[in-house]
Length: 103
Image 1 (cartoon, rainbow, N blue to C red):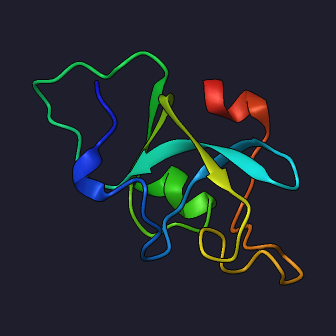
Image 2 (image 1 turned 30 degrees about the horizontal axis):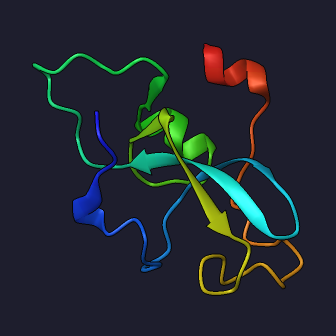
């Protein structure tokens, strides 16, 4: 599966939930997420996990979403990409332990 260029991945836009795999002071490596429904006739790609509405709610999200560990982006650690980076919570909405990702 190719990166969804229709979503303009090289341009920051509206706030978008993302899973930060790791970061330095300069960049963050972020896994792709989408709340668009996954087509039932398309196999889930390797490295992808679907979070249903209940699982999403546990992560402070109001709809189901797909986390695609097979689609990664290296984003600059700037206010343009991370508008809440200077605030106390640094824009972190929720977190989970690594083990929960595999369940």
